[in-house]
Image (cartoon, rainbow, N blue to C red):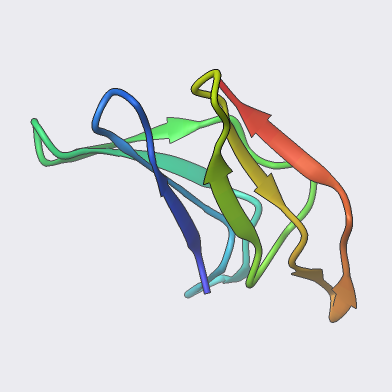
Length: 79
C-alpha cells in the first residue's frame, strides 16, 4: 500500500504504506543507479493507499490516502 513516483533524477520516491511495524509516515528514495535506499523527510501523518504524482516543476506530491481508516485531504511536497 505504499505509493511511488519516478523523480526527474531517475530515482524513485516511495512513501507511506504498511510495513512490519504497522502503518508508516516514512518516505524513502531508491537510487536505480546505485541500487540503494536513502531516507527522505517523513510525512506529517501515516498514510496508506495515497496517490503520488510529479508536478511540472519536478516536485513530487503525495496526497490523500487513509490515516487511521479516515480519508485524508492533506498533501506533502518533496522537491
